[in-house]
Length: 274
Image (cartoon, rainbow, N blue to C red; front, side, top):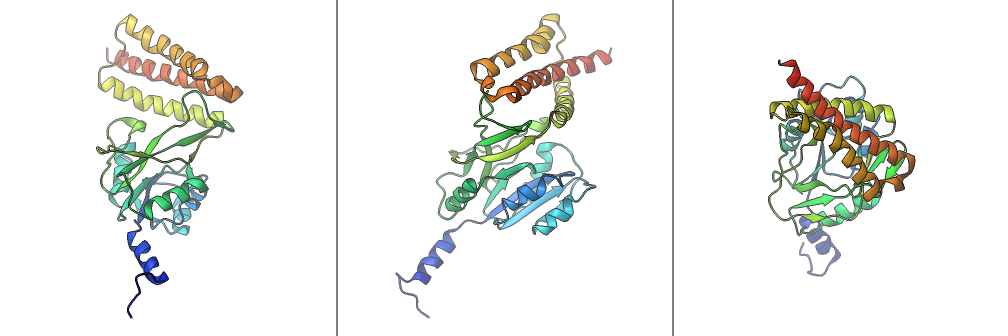
């Protein structure tokens, strides 16, 4: 059957052939509380990859219920684990997500439209809106919390050996999307404190390996006291963190404590070697 140039079927065929396929890459460990909400927001993707590091809850069961492909890999670091997930993706483009991140309906539509034609850039920053202690945080330097998460497959491996703050490394020009990715980061103060204690210990190990252990008294005072205090003053006052109410106050106070912890822990590790 010959198709006319202007026929609806021809138009559909052209649009369909132009559409870029999308893989969603995730890592998980005991994420049954977050995963349904996250996977529901990317159900429309062509492929969902979940790399699990030994969950003992319903994480794998939930992932399979959304049609995700799952794989086990022993945890060897945040960037390292996410690179495993990226390596399993087979679509034209990859969206890297954490298990507690959700695409807003507006962002879903924006990505679908972007991949429905030829994207101008090879990678895109996505604004992230963070949920702390029951409140969406919009000030104090925490919004827009741009993350490089959407890119052509195989073009943006994550940095490794840097603890929980690994980021995709893309060398070309990057674009910015308009709509928010919702990050259900720390719904309670207890969860936040547990994570910051664990993350500060990971960062302290890296600081210790790099010799940043505040050996001199001036270095210790700056890293463990003045730096945390200056960070609080800058984010809470000059970057208007106080506009986020008591939740903003708790966030910025405890973020400064996290900075204090990582330098004190690094110093303590070095002290233990003597």
